[in-house]
Image 1 (cartoon, rainbow, N blue to C red):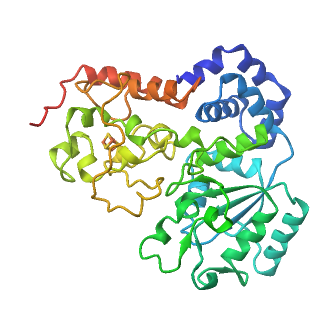
Image 2: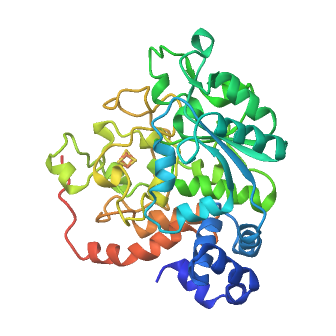
Image 3: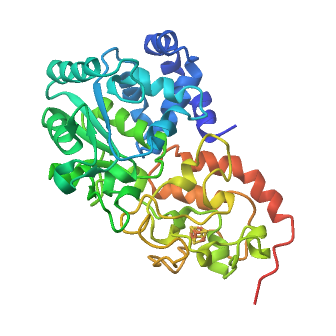
Length: 394
Ligand code: SF4
């Protein structure tokens, strides 16, 4: 049983919430059992770093019948961000996203085409002026007056400016919209640019290639609950998701601290699950919660480093799609904090209970996703501790 499941079973607040009319309405509306819905809401509360007392407000916001209008524009991109949201393994995630917001314009999902959809976009903008959320997916080409990307005869530059003018909030989803991403790779022939730079104002960015759908959903739920977007860092990224280096929460960190590195793909160190720093892992200079949230609800190890590939720094401007994959990362932290797993501690698969638990505590998560992970992994660490540690390389 995870920490969140345990808390939901034992907390009086959770029990009264579970019996509430709001959860009954949610069950009917979303077709999701009350307990599952509550668990999902609790996970979002934890991933946003909110105290458990915020659960009632989050449930209330998620179950209200009024859904904010969302206009979702797609420019220079591969549709991976949209796919990541819709193809999430969790059966309720895409349903929740589509139920929580009124997706009034989305080129990939709209059944209609041509003039009809452009009219629908304009009608949604007019009806919700000053209240809708604009989500931008993909970079915006600015060279040659923006002729490299046109939708409905309008350049991406003109369209994003037009729609942003009446929006309550602008969210850049994915690395391309956040800072140019893949289309902006040198020599950047189309002048691919971020939404923030084209609009000339800061926007909330959720970089990643693709980004975690939970980070997007948490941002939307924060807006629904508090009427404001979450606190962001200097690059516009929500601090709850991008506040810590990947290197600090990586399950291979103890190998880094002990000097155990894979030197080639497929060598002994790589097969043993040792640190990928010398293969070019950018975890030491990349801020994101990938090792905590993982991907596709597949469990431990379901993220790039977990599967044996170095992090390419896709959430970090100036790193992802900029630095060569084999180039060594700049180390932001060298000495491991005392809370980290001991270098001599045997390392198995996935984050250790110590590192995951520490992530939760330091992130201010009352019932954090990291703690949930720690709970799951405690058994694995115990099992690993009973085995011989891998031999240290000279
Ligand atoms: Fe993990 Fe990469 Fe840091 Fe090694 S360098 S501990 S693989 S994030």
